[in-house]
Image (cartoon, rainbow, N blue to C red):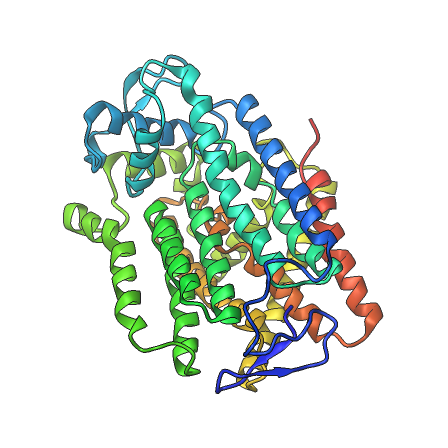
Length: 454
């Protein structure tokens, strides 16, 4: 982490630290390179491996297996077919996954159309042409690749030591669902990309005080928000918190408030339009309702007693951790034991968040602490809304499949950053090194052994 501490006046005070070099306020913006010269090469290797894995997944994936790719692809095809960039969600139909001709089955997606309209313009005609799917998958690989590049850029700009950079970058690169989603047509890719740009822009705005980084962050907010509602719920509070911090510290002119409000209004535009057209920011179309009710009936959940809210929260937490490694295969006992790794990482992140909040309270914070605090508050708010919405759906239908970690991909970098905030707070060298080893090795081990082989 940077070794400069932010004072109320915005000046930087040098602190002896093992995690970076002091950058005074009067110095030019730090070069976008890490303290350890090897970090750039490591970042390049991680990026190349991610792109390769995503392309291999794009070439091999069955469109009917996972992440609702038939529905996402059908959304694009409907916009191309109708010529309407703001389609009526109740009239959309699904493509046949073999012929790519439209069927009579309704499309259940209720996301904003911006992402799909963009891809409809960029790619060739989908209807009747299943062979062009790979082109759209490559576009998604590029979108997700931009997001990963932004997060790696942050790691280099932060001037982490080599060990800290590994502890930051490896967990991101080892997110089990990241490469498979990148190699599929899915709006999660734009949400991830937008959230990554927000995180990079806010970090650099804190460190360099250059207005251009805030412009980039606000652009990321719009991109993530136009992808899906969770992108809006995650990035808007985070950007708002960091900008409020800068305003209160006297490091940002108050004239930025109208610009921020304009960006917020732009980000919220799809949901205002949904409210006007459907009465809700998450339209409950007949196909969406049928998907939940029919799915709950097929699973037998609709006839089971409804869980109390504490029981549902416990179930949700367990399902959330288990779905960190999404798989359709039956897990064995060893696979379940492996879930201890992401659970322990979350515990480390929570401890790091507590330390960051304490440093902010004591006016001894770094850019790392501000980003961790803002991002974690945004995640907590989104999680609370997610839990409430999911529980109401459970009470109404018995549905038990809403605990998807991929909804939080836009701010997934907050978890390793929070773990680094914990690393900084550990004075004992052996314990600090042991934690770093776990943060680096744990995700790799889980990525290999977290799901059944074959």
